[in-house]
Image (cartoon, rainbow, N blue to C red; front, side, top):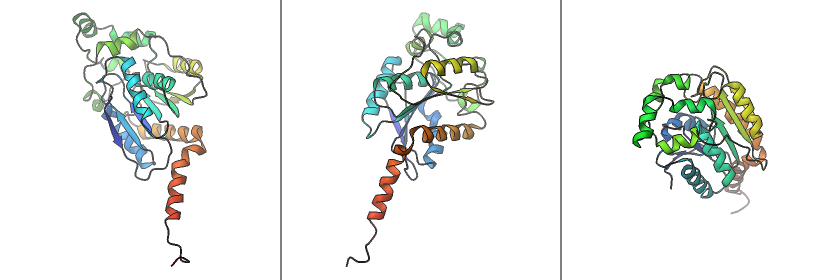
Amino acid sequence: MLEATPIRAESPRYGASLLFLPELWAPARIWLPVASFLGHRGWEGQLVELRQAGGLEERVAGVVDLARRLPSPPVLIGHGAGGVVALEAARAGPAAAAVLVAPLDPGSAPVRVMTRRWEAIAALLLGRRMSPPGAAAFGSLPATVAAQLDVETTRAVLDVVRGRPLASVGQGLPVLVAGGASDPLLPVDAAAALAGRLMAEHLVIPGAAHWPLVESGWQRTVDLLHRWLVRRLGEPLLELHAEAMAEREGGQDDPDEE
């Protein structure tokens, strides 16, 4: 079972909760500012630790198991390889929507570059965990991110580098591909093509590279994601808020009852 840290909403408003899935090499807590920001908007969420699982298959199975334990299908929000996990978990289990932020497209030429370095080759040959790439691979690497990255299982990295390109989930599931305007791992034209392949909506994040939810101006990006979710999921998303208001009104004292 994957470890998940709950993030409570100040005033829960929505019938779906959010599962936050991190990039390779990144801990779940990297999502904390975003999850807290959305918590102020009324979203319940969980930060899901993926590095404790071996490869992508185990990570997907863990997320599906977590989603099935929730009272309603969650929104799966994944960054980088976490986006791959989000999409595959949505294919296999309950999900209200999938949001892929700067997703990695397995097997694509930009993704394969991540293992074309001496440290990665040595890790593969010696069966060791793999260190993260440098800033050049990501386009930029904020200091706050670099301080949190750690070694990753070679199997998880290889699952992405050598995996099959992402394919549509189908079944009418709302999917968003949100890519940075200057992300070398998913250039804008590649992001548009990926969105078309997934039958998803495409959002370009101006001025962002591969870490748009940590880079300067991330709050504006989160605002865009919030608006997309409310627009795409519609009225049923407010079900929890409506129920809470009904209970609140029903609990008021009736002046005629004494």
